[in-house]
Length: 462
Image 1 (cartoon, helix red, strand yellow):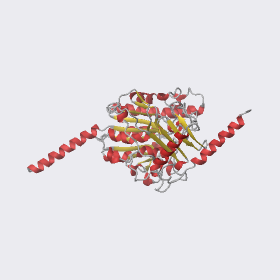
Image 2 (cartoon, rainbow, N blue to C red; image 1 turned 45 degrees about the vertical axis):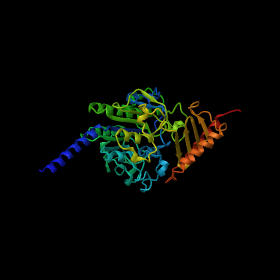
Image 3 (cartoon, rainbow, N blue to C red; image 1 turned 180 degrees about the horizontal axis):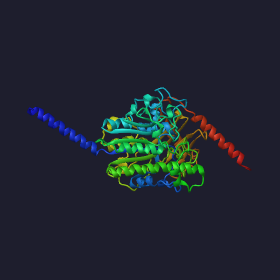
Image 4 (spheres, rainbow, N blue to C red; image 1 turned 120 degrees about the horizontal axis):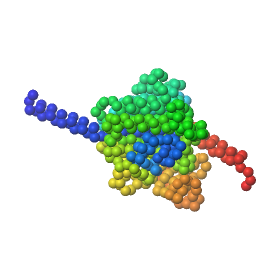
């Protein structure tokens, strides 16, 4: 071997060693998403009936976001925003998937949108999607096409917890192959076990896991084992719902123990949040107004924390508004990835803010749009504007004085309304029309009609 060949070989070995060292320094990332879980359905937000000791422990070790929002008040659009780091209205994903079954590849988050998984995979991460997908029903839009090396879950939006396939959207797949019923027990536990299996694979690459539990979304299914921990709750509906939440908590505790046992917890980021506010039945969004589907705080403010022992000081509560879109750039910065290449992201890395290096706020203004503007909301500073189809009125709240949105101050502040509506129109000019529609507008009108009819029947006198 001549001198030039030796020099090239030595350089190659050095680069390989540096790349391996760099990969080891990059954090593992576990993004945990629950489905339709209420603000007050975790102990770290004040729940007193649902035991969530594992989540409470991880939250206390990290940073709790007391003003943590998602970008949409219901499932599929919220997930599209989370995974792309962009307002989903940018690419017309304002609505849930159509309910008629498998759709064509034009319906869902398009492949032109670069997901977190793709950005991390480019930097050497091994990537896994586990659980509920619901951002593209067609096989061309399933996780393997969106940067995930490994996939275990179902494509659609709703699924029983025993894994019985009803149609292609309600079938459990592993890497495109249907999973045998004999391999499944209770989906919440199955998703936990799959995540642990992925974590414990002996590879020298950091990992990214998108663990999207379908709990506690309906149907209300649980096991006797999980129900044992919530038997103190007398109301049966809340009892079963609480058991579903506790099953998630138990699973996350097992994942946490696995990280400790493999000596990788310190350099693993865990983020936990719900995809939207709690569902109308059995969930608890108190003290906030509204529920899933609404742009009141109860529909878009969610339980939300980040844990990274090696880099983030624990026992913190961060009270400035943040949004699920922020996670994409946060993960990129944590992994030492150049974020300038992702200049179209709408989120901001939260690391400078929660480390107190930047004492400002991540966002001056936040926006929400549902079904192409059928409803929309703007939060700027203490003020929140909500064009509500439920109330057929544009509402205004001062969240500093009225965080529960009880007092509409729109009539007294027309100038603020004008400014916030102008800001919304400017923002919305960069969006596109929804690529498809869902029944949300019809459901909103029916819900409000039922409310008013019930009030009328139950009220007497002036």
